[in-house]
Length: 157
Image (cartoon, rainbow, N blue to C red; front, side, top):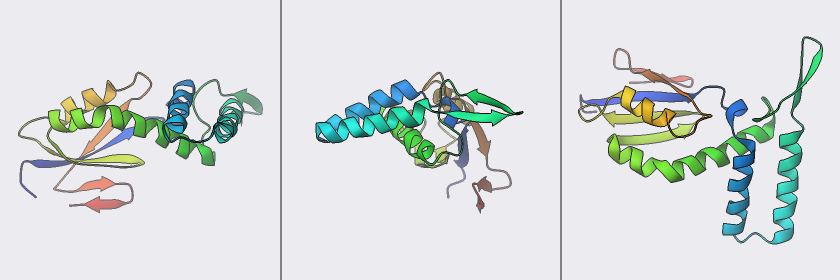
């Protein structure tokens, strides 16, 4: 790798609890229409969506708490719904961000892995733009140390 290329990872703070449920439902509805899914199947999927996003509750200190927004932690459906929302954001903004910041490689699996040209941008500038993508999402950053970056359960050199 060239010396001015930098490795970094971005993580979304409290991802599931910050996914905007109503906005994601609109995205899902538009996706189903765009994919020409028949109306009966669309209605069934949207009923499923309503049930799993409105029946979010958990127990804390022997109290039952109803989650007002966001997705349930630990629910199998939360990963899928968050992917729908994040892919929509990427579709809207990723081309612009990769050009603006000379991002050489962008990969997302839970966290985001980036390789960018540090001669043309800084990780703080990238972080600022990612944090401006949506008011509910806040990203944190980790950069390489000693030519290595810990990403998920691996070390990349």
